Length: 90
Length: 431
Image (tube, rainbow over all chains, first blue to last red; front, side, top):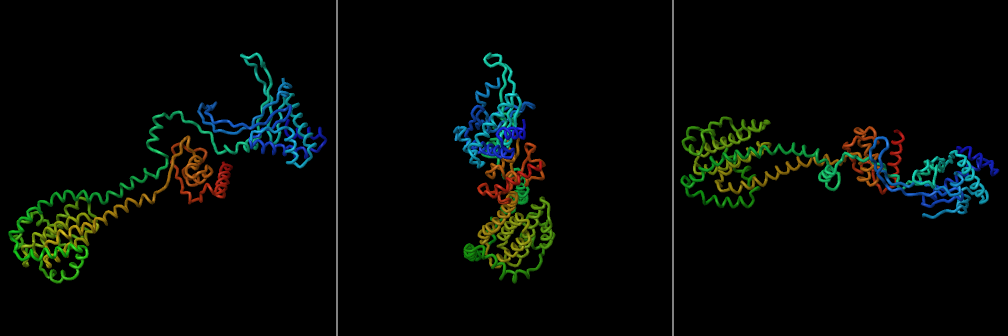
């Protein structure tokens, strides 16, 4: 499901225009960005948690040419699936 | 920092950000995530703009743990813009490919060669230039040595005959004059040259070789006398030409011979006893002649005039006083010339260069030299002739690090930093 279809579905279900929904979605993305940049995690019940994590630098081997590389440290956004959703998936 | 934002807080934040009511926001959030969940449960991926992509991945059963058989799990790939925003504090770091062929010995060698840092003020390029500039004065000094070895032969016999032939009255005058010369040796010289000398001494007739031989034979080596054929003017002509190195000792001998001959002829006019001293003076001065090839002309003239002056003033003992004076006036000039020659290329080439390796790239160099990786653009601009692609530089390339003033580089100045960032974006876009 792509973004457009998602927006249309959600708009239909809550009885609002797709424009409103896409605006709200933009707002949600903005909140996620600002909060996760501050290393705060965002919890959504029965769905999961968005949490930023710091990955340390590490040496990895390039899978193709076998060269060893020093990968720098970085902050990644991790998504931890809630148990409810996990159980539903099974 | 590291706090967990609950659903209620999230609703508040969203309503604040989008200026909609809490109720609408809550409804929207619940509906959104339930839609995503349901789609995922159906096993289809969902892409949400600005957040990321959720995917369902089948996981195979693990052999060792029967607890978790084959199952589905959800993977999340954050949106590119979101990921970059999060990683901003570490954005400057780049993945480095490690060179496995480098051994510990090689590293140790590098450490030895560049003790603290890799910054070099072009030592490789400077040295040959310095060496080039040095040879000019050097050969002269080297050729001096053989000359000095020769001179003792001519000099040595002289001191002994002096007392024999010398009449009494002269020594009385000499010490007094020597003293006066010692007081201001440098000033004294021009005076001697200028006023009294030329008048009386110039009328001296050109030599009558036969008489000269009879009176002064013991002091001269036959070759020296034979060597004298050109007049002083001719010698000057020869000296002014660019002469090859082997000429220097020969010229020195020629000049010495000429001077000796000149004095012997002058000495005939009545000052026979002083000739030995005058000859000594000629020798010492001709020494200096050969040292200063370039200044040969003036020195020779000076020496001639000096000798005349000496003769007239009868200040034979002023020789020792004059010798140091000449040394002090001329050697510093030589030294300065040497120094200037050596320093000039060094100043002109005070470029800072550095070597790009597989681990040291333009951004690392910029960080090192300017304090911020963004300034790599300027290094690239400075070396555009060598670097075709800033992302792909052959390891071992020596790049010139431009002085920070040239591009107004200042890591503490935000405007300068922004300018560099803008430039680097443009370059990267272009690629």
